[in-house]
Each structure stands twice: as C-alpha cells, then as structure tokens.
Image (tube, rainbow over all chains, first blue to last red; front, side, top):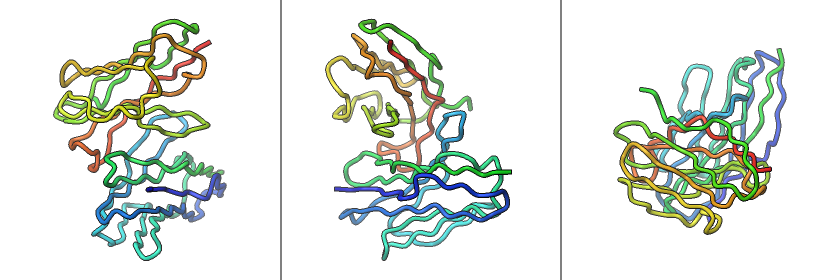
Length: 113
Length: 115
C-alpha cells in the first residue's frame, strides 16, 4: 500500500535560517504524483507544488525549492532564509493508482523572530 | 476567482442534531472532494464527485454521513444524527481533473463541534 512518511513532527528555527522538510514515500505504482501543501495557523490548506513520477527535475520558486529523488523515494522541501510567515504545518501528499490523495502526518514548522 | 467557498465557518451543535455543511467549488472545476481533519487521524478523504456524480464514498465513516452534489456549483455534507466524535474540521476542495492531480484548491473549512 502507498504510504507517506514525514518523520519530522516539529521543527523550530530562527528567522533567516534555511530549513529542510523531509518526505519519504512508499509505492509500487509506476505513475504517481507528489504534492506539498501548507496549512498556516489560519487553517486553510494551500497548494504549493505538484510533481509527477517522470519528472525528477528539482524546482525552485523564490525561497522554496524541492528535491525529488526516485532512487530514495524522497521529495524534500527546503525553505531558504526562513521568515516568520513560513510558520505553518506542511503536508507531503501522494497521488497514485488508488485515485485518492494520501496525506502525510505533517511537519509543524515554527520560525522564531 | 472567489475560490472554494464553505459555510458555515464554525458550527456548534448538540449531539443528535442534524448538521449540514455546504460547499461551492470553483467554477469550471470538474471534481469536488470532502475531507475531514482531526488530530488523531489527520486528513481523510470522505467522498469525491466527478461531474456531480459520486465516484468513491468509501471514506464515509458510516450511514450517518451523506453527501450530495445536485449541480456543478453546490455540494452538501450532512451528518444525521451527529455525535461528539464527529467533531473535526471539514474541508471541501475542488480540482480541474478527476483525480486532483493538478492540485486541489481547498476551502477554508468548517470547524464542527458536537457537544
């Protein structure tokens, strides 16, 4: 069965530090998608990125970057020069043959001023 | 684009009462999803619709839960009768494609408290 593991339950950093959120997934699907969502303290869920299993190119969007490695079944998320506004719960999510998105348990990131 | 609109934002009800949660998806999105978020179980998919037709309701916890999508712009999730263990945040999301692989757009959620 498919599974998403976010081993880091909570991370606390000081503003301007870089931080990496880990995500490891398990699957036997040959075609699948991976996502990251952000849930700030206000509670809404915000889509950040989508990656398909055939595209291992890393992606950068401003201070955010993502490292997808099929060899290690990982899809890690790095925030460079973190800011207080980055404080949120971040969910790594898998979508594959089951037609359902599977959310990881989330990593709570606290950025201290 | 107003995004996915859910109502109410907060609902407090007594055990045994009927609760109806509402969702308006983004215009043009073909798929709609209902999720429940709790501390114990995280985010769980309850049901999803494609072109207004329920495709998979295997996540609906029991017969007390029902969902409808009478047209492309409106869906409801009903709990009757409600129980304290139903207390959670209920999210509605919509997507361009049937599997949500282009990313969901979530509503702000309805925080339900059953006392």
